[in-house]
Image (cartoon, rainbow, N blue to C red; front, side, top):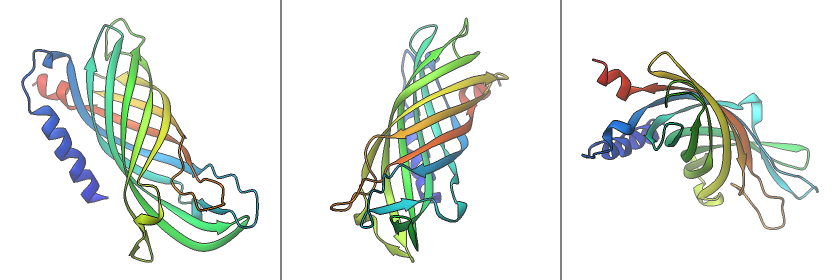
Length: 210
């Protein structure tokens, strides 16, 4: 998890170190949040492999950063990059095998943003966009089993947010998996669905106000 977060901030540092005439319309910051998740597998028979969030481990930290561009008074593009690690338990039909797998992801979200306020970044807004989740590591009993799972999965996210104070936003997003993270031969696909709740700290606003 720490390695993934370091990778995220390295990417954002590269994005921010450039000169542009549109710099005044850019903002950037950090994301501090949690992810509620579960699988969407449809287990239709005794041989169907499923992964579920075992032992009530269905809430995990979701940390990263964002880069936002104001296109018009109400429309913008918000790019989010976050990291999280989810724990799943393997089973067949309604029988748990007690095998727990830890899957670490880096999620990339290019979101369309519509701000309902009279000024951008000063009120209530809606976001919509795809999620590209890259599996960085999967482990079982300290063994690397990354090759057993899909390297890249796609999803769709829809959310609402509200700017509070001058530099803080609270945001909630629903996440619906479009492609499976696991699909064995002859079994039903396993997808991930969930909800993200996070605080977005506008570092650009904090720095520029000093």
